[in-house]
Image (tube, rainbow, N blue to C red; front, side):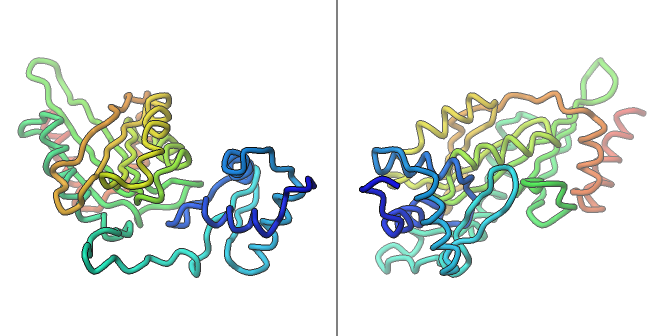
Length: 269
């Protein structure tokens, strides 16, 4: 343990660096973040002493395996009251869901230029089995585009991972990437106000999205979702049809499954 390494000081820094919405962070990633913040290496012994202090106080939780992760507990993830002068300055994720759905069903769908082809938008944040970590996108969009001369249709499945201002991290990009195990396209949707402190991370997040072929959508003002901006276009993944078929069967509602089946049956006729 170095002379300048104070576990109590590191514990406070850990709390400040953890995403405010409770998103887990790998231990090794947190040590790297601490090293950048402190401008010096953080030895393992001191890091775990600080982490264990926070665990004992119940201020953070942990996930075991794959290097281990830590996250803010419910008691720490308190959504502060917005200032009276700007009641919409802070938006929890649950409140962002409706604006995102409006954007996907409106501006985003129009941008796909699907015409009268089938397009389904569904909230999947609480649907389907948890097949490992990050298996539930917040929304999916399914399109089935007919061809004029060729038989059949092209089915595209998009997954959208929604993050609050505090939740826009490199790990959020990895969440969106993990969801392409089951879809063709992955998108990170980040609520990032103009002039927010988190704008300092925008360049890094955009670079990570581009490196992994993940789309990045910036939602500046949830009160005007039609003005959301696509900063990075996603790259189509070659996900196997069988995997996507099973994913849709477990995620789509019965009504949406019937709509998709009917559209594809009509196209095959």
